[in-house]
Length: 433
Ligand code: G6P
Ligand code: MN
Ligand code: MN
Image 1 (tube, rainbow, N blue to C red):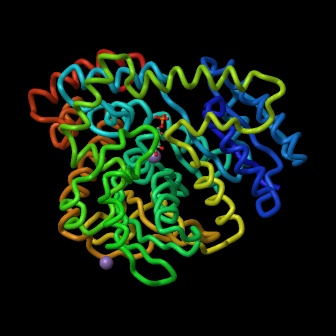
Image 2: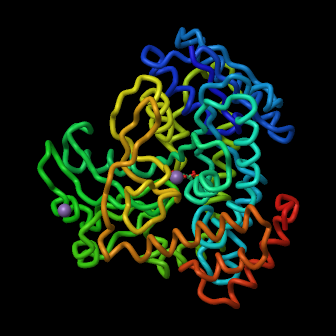
Image 3: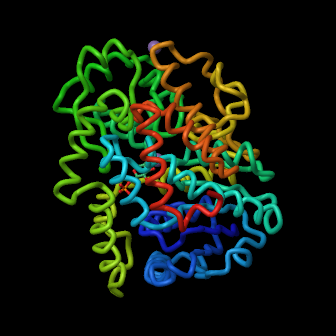
């Protein structure tokens, strides 16, 4: 059977993953799951690891669960390595969200200033893991869920020797599910061509049984009663004429760019009431871990669906199974562009529909992005590239540049102010700066 290593195994999301592996055990027999964490995460690792053990036992699946703080030992001869950590934990996320808000900018963990800082903290750690994989499991795939997945995948593809890297996000699968439900047809009858970047992906065309229904879907989504979103993004409705003339499906995260002022107002309100997303998630996590501690619990509790990452295991587990089984099905993944989107460098990461084979995901050729969306995608790609370079080099100037070119940062002065404050706040997790 397969050996899977999950780094950040103490995460509250682990039961999602374990459930996904249990469901697919027949087609994808995992004999060993190694949950790895660091000293600070030891307690969480034990709680969630024991739940994982109860889950496999109850399901009657012969999957061994190992808990360890020794990453290198765990990596030996792994087939797949998944990464889901949060450097600096939720307290760092609180700073990523609140400090930009104090300067009048959107505070979000994957977009704008908060996104850059999550990248600066995370990228060096993931590069180290990729390096260790070269020594201990050079043929294993690194499947990354750690945010900001776009910038992180960009950094891994450009700066690591380990090339078997895929970034995963649950946004496309959530859009796919929502649209199938809206159209009231089975998921597998709906096909969507996805292209763009992580948390900046668009549905270019929607088909049902091969018939294009893009405009019909846009009409549905223009109804203010229907708000395709995720649990972590305020369900602000799209302006109807905008959506219809855009002609493609934006993802929930596009609200940060096309509804900047409205989202900012929502966030400032949340700041006042102590209900920023990070603070809400902190309370949710406490609740979740209380549930996980209960020895009578041996399934993934439904409360986990209050998190923005609900169903991400479907994305991750189907990816592993499709590589293992050479399924050649279509999945939306963060991979090396390789010419799939014209106008983006071959070696850059894109989030795009791929055919998943034994050799890994092969991106489907999209051609040029429509001019209506190309500009924003290019600007965010620049942000990701410069941000990744800042993370690798520890360059203050590059970090400042990344912020200044980000559309959610209003000026060079604002960029410097928020940069200096975030550098100070996250000092302990930014050894390169
Ligand atoms: C979405 C994104 C994930 C992100 C999550 C945050 O699902 O795709 O990348 O981690 O939301 O959810 P949370 O519950 O932590 O706010
Ligand atoms: Mn995501
Ligand atoms: Mn079309």
